[in-house]
Image 1 (spheres, rainbow, N blue to C red):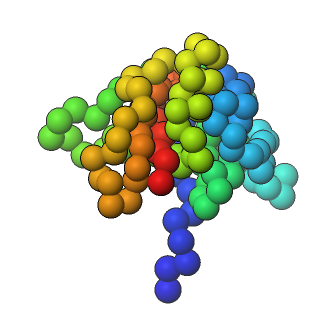
Image 2 (image 1 turned 30 degrees about the vertical axis):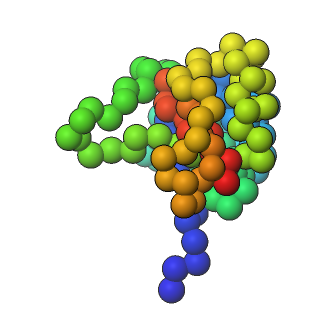
Length: 142
């Protein structure tokens, strides 16, 4: 029986920049940070190159897993029309307007200012920005 949504895993180009964005600006909580080439019990993971960083961030009702390869990573690309893939990550907040102004002041790339949501049956306000790797982030208020 399903218990809930657990986590989304993604690769980032710079673990520290991503942690700054997701922890300091969005307010997620750091649960685990360790070398990505070892398990939680300290045993090595043979299939990953040395130098990776792995973090799990608590987003309230699910986790965000971020992997920072030692070699870095290219910027994310939006999913092209007609192509399968994840279009954005969505996080819910008490006050999207205030958060939007704070992110804008911090130099975050803002995509769309707060507006009334199209899906008003589940969300009241919505805004969009990009994380340090260009991943589209949807900010919602219920």
